[in-house]
Length: 306
Image (tube, rainbow, N blue to C red; front, side):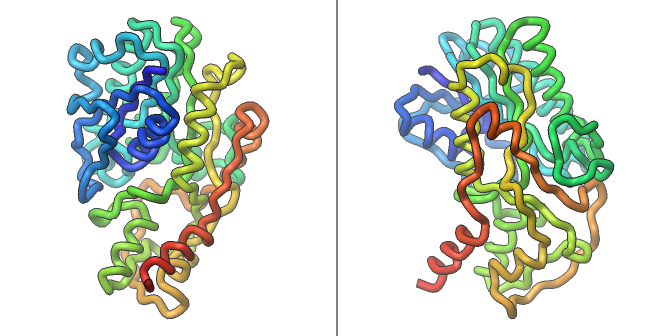
């Protein structure tokens, strides 16, 4: 197949590109490398890369010719920076997503798989989070990403473009961001611990998160693209582990019982607890999470002591 991955030089995207290349597909990547979350970007020498802004429709549209499947991961992807610059979030996550969908529609792409976020559930919904719960967007990131969900569903209903939507829960794993104070917590703690620094715990550290390994996210994307039944089209699916941990748990798992940490102020616009109900993805896509956080972090700890 000919496949196109937006954001394919970043964290989740690079893992997906490697899987698609391994599976024998011809892979084109669009990534403007504007994210400041990475020390470096990631490339596969068997894929083709284009340094374009996804919101620049005229530049990206020709790249969709003869493409069978699109995996749309490019985004302004962290909550706090979007609070600082909401317009950039809307430019990339709303206009950029519309550009991707329109280019896919123009060139007869079979299906677009869209990466969204569990931050759509906010504070108002009980756990575990289910896809039919009302949205409770607390920040520009979740507003812009769920706007992308609605664009996907509209393109499916109005134009017949097949779309599948995923809401990810706190993804971690190989190639994860570690740079800056807003890096995802597992990568941030690993960087701080390896540098001999105290880990920075936001608020009281008792907020709980559902942590999902990137390989499970990649598997969900591949299954969604190749799933033949149209009952997945226009649907939203949670992708999580179905378990959660508080931040003090992560401190101990990364650094041991005596790990050093310091408290930093609570951040606005963030949920108190996330926990996924993935029964819909299991029932329709035959997907289920396989990697356990404790086992992965233990393996990481073992590599650091060797």
